Amino acid sequence: MIFAGFASAPRVRASVKPSDLRKTIKKKEKFMTTDTKPPPFEAPFNQQLLGNAFSEFAADHLSDDLYRLSKHLGTRNPDAQAHGFLGGEFGYGQHFKNAVFEMHPYFWGDCECGFEERSEEWQRQHRHSPDCYQTHLRAEQRKAGLSYVDRNENREIKIFEETVKRSYDEARKVEDQIYDRLLKQFSLPKGGWAVHCTCDHDPAFEKWCSENHHTPECGIVLPNFRHFASGLEVRWYKYIGRGMSCNQEITAEVFKKIADECVTWSAATAA
Image 1 (cartoon, rainbow, N blue to C red):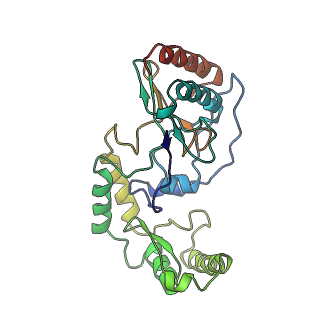
Image 2: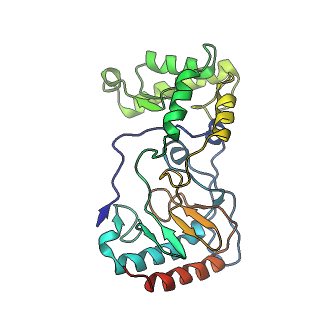
């Protein structure tokens, strides 16, 4: 049995694009009908900032059949099944691959291909300008003794000596006051308050990201489910049913046939 544990500390994915973080988060409808195609996927802020790669289309409507496939694999080979707290007995999947499909649990580790190290080095060498909103924001947060995400270092900075003197609500109130003051000073919208950039840093970083990538087998970008014949890839956030996305507009009815095929072929594959 494999336990899908938690990362030792929150870490910002070095490859996350600033423009992705600025998107307005929309509440998605659950698409469970057989003939409805999915909407574009809008990842929650924490998934964008701390999670692995995600795909273009929402995939909530594929959850039931993926869980069914995971249950089939877990029943055949329980020792290979990953487990956790919130995803149910078979909600985490397992590492499995045959000629028809592959499945992998959510990846909790760091980049395996060196891309994020290169990305972090780029950001260390290319700082936000002194008059950028980001520079002012971090200075204000440090001055107020708040913990914050340093986007130059791609990690959370903890300022324990000051934060322990405030309750969570008190700290958030101080932080909201900082945001309100700076947003007004820079004439910026509330949406994207944590990631606004008013210098050329973010456009330059996005250009670098468009020219540099993870290797396909790196755990950060490896899909949790891939059907080889159709090219369908599905990704989830921590467990099946959460933060679900896929790379194709596929209906639940079509995916059920794919899942049926995977169950049949996995039954013919030695555990």
